[in-house]
Amino acid sequence: MAYKLDGAKFPTLEELIAALYPLYADKMSEAEFRKYVQENAKEE
Image (cartoon, rainbow, N blue to C red; front, side):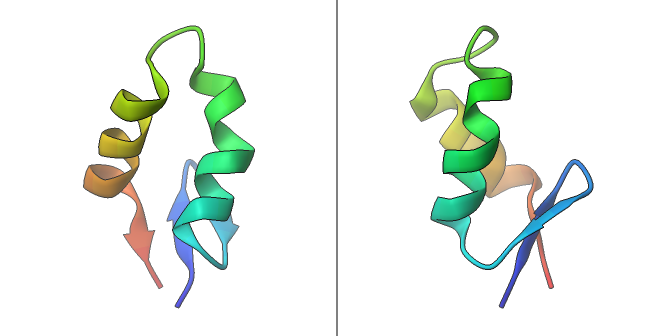
């Protein structure tokens, strides 16, 4: 199963977090980003 967020698709949730968190680092903590991903990432 793949996960999609902001138009980017990743094979695992951890890969999505590792790749996209730097883009959000100035806006939220990693814990906040993980929560955001769990609420907003689409499973495909």
